[in-house]
Length: 213
Image 1 (cartoon, rainbow, N blue to C red):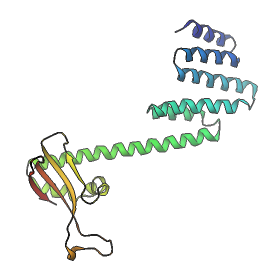
Image 2 (image 1 turned 90 degrees about the horizontal axis):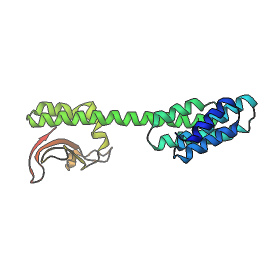
Image 3 (image 1 turned 90 degrees about the vertical axis):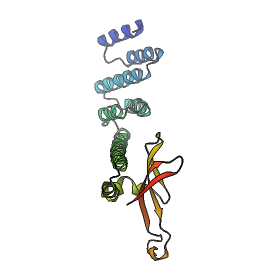
Image 4 (image 1 turned 180 degrees about the vertical axis):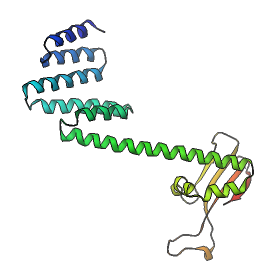
């Protein structure tokens, strides 16, 4: 900790309502490359001075400083910390309140993506193990289930496929293929019957078992 930081912290203990001291302390943090601490110091000073003076002119300054702190955390991927800061300052202005709502939506979306990714990985692992064991009934059950439809098939287009695991010579591949048979064409939906299935084998040389669901 630099000498300046120690001095200004002691000065603030003596004069806690002197905004200039907070600005100087913030500058000392900035010289050390600690921009977050600098902004937090400015924000703290603004709020303390405003509580004493009641001057509305500090609102815009506080809002600007707080938004910078929040966005710094957000850019670093520290979403929980950004939300914590926004919750602390949401009463400052409508802008901070709206930013908090945006962050909460973003966290909810990230948690949903993470959940789906975990479920997808688990399902692929179960399919892979069933393919290794030639357990065709288990494969059929897994790929026809509601979970597979939600996690895998709904996110795949015609002729798309997923290989698992990606770094192994012997792989499982799940796919969606249209069956080009006019008797199976769905005029209302505008496509042929879609066949779902699983390949298991060496995808490099094409020696694969075909296990259709």
